Image (cartoon, rainbow, N blue to C red; front, side, top):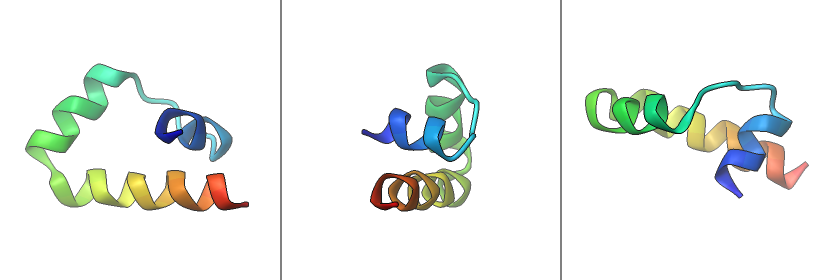
Length: 42
């Protein structure tokens, strides 16, 4: 659902970038989670 939500929101990042982002920039990753969740709810 997370990747699908990102695609619906128009965010194009691959899984490796997401993994790196989750480790290096947790706040930025959390923002992407919110974007994906909002796109799934819409």
